[in-house]
Structures are given as C-alpha cells and as structure tokens.
Length: 207
Image (cartoon, rainbow, N blue to C red; front, side, top):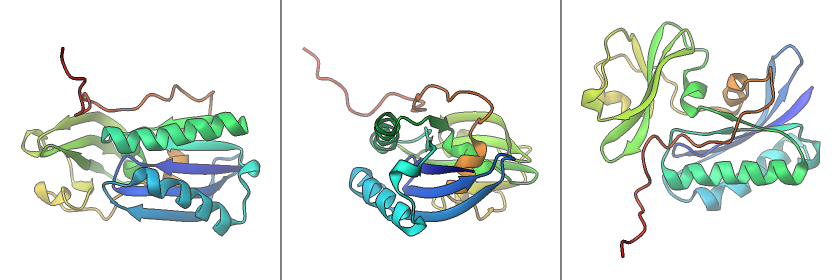
C-alpha cells in the first residue's frame, strides 16, 4: 500500500490529510485536518500537514506520493497549496499528482450534479457531473449565467449553492480521500498547472 498526503487550498477549507491507497485503488483515510478561512492559507497549511501526519502516526519520509488540488481557486490560496506540494515532492523525491478540486467534490455523486465554489467578484467556479464524472467545465461565471438545465442537484460552497434553484447535496469541500480517488494513477503525474481560469487581481503598475 502507498501512503499519500492529500492537500487542497482552492477553497476556504484548507485541507491536509493522510490516505492509504491499495493496489486495487481502494483507499483508507487515516487522518484529516481542515481549517476554515478564506485567508491565511500560508499560516494554516503547514501546521495542518504536521498535525495530520502526527494523527496518523506517519513520518513525512514514509510518504509515497502527494496529491494536490489545482483549482480552480483564488490565486493566492491556490498558489500556497501547489507550491507546498511541489516543494515537498522535490525534497522527498516523490511524485506529486495534480487534480481538479471540483472533481474531488463531485466524485462519487449519483445522477447529474452541478458543483460550485466561490470565485469572488460575485462569480462562481463551476463544473457539471454525471455519476461522478465531469461532463462540463470547469469555468467561471456569474451565478445567473450558469445554466441549471439538466442538473438534479447542486453541491459545493454553502454560500453559493443556495443561489441555484436546485436541491442542495451535502458535499461542500474536497476530502483527502476523494482527492486521492480522482487522481490519475495509471501514468506519470501531470504538470502542476493551477486552474486560475482568469488573471489574478494584482497587476504590475504601468510605466
């Protein structure tokens, strides 16, 4: 079995957890530390990693891989998680697998589900799923511009699911085990490319 550290900072749930993955793809969650906050990702993530390892009784040297949510998400928070995962992977000489954060929320759902998270600027990141597989998105739009046609439920950010005329599924944020389950384990890890979907708010001043 492989010991995997799962991280996500694309939502206000600053997540770190240890998951054991068997050769047949089954997973066993061992620990989970989540700090809620739209800011403070840099301050919370490293202590959450240390606490999750301590809770599971696992030293970082025992890790076989890292899985990290690559968004979509706000620029600063997303960068913290991906940079931390990349640095740990390099230091430990283990692979780092990027996954779409929305996929980890939609994974394992039944029927047609719309997943939304906070994109700020009165917009949402969204993607559509059928039986847990993504069929649309990810994209960023104002809630009024996201069509609910064909969806039976909505999941994701509790502050934004209520903006859609759909029954709300109690699936708000990605869990460590679902982050591991949506990773592509059949080949080498893909590039650590963040899904910003738009340019960051900060811009270099003009001359």
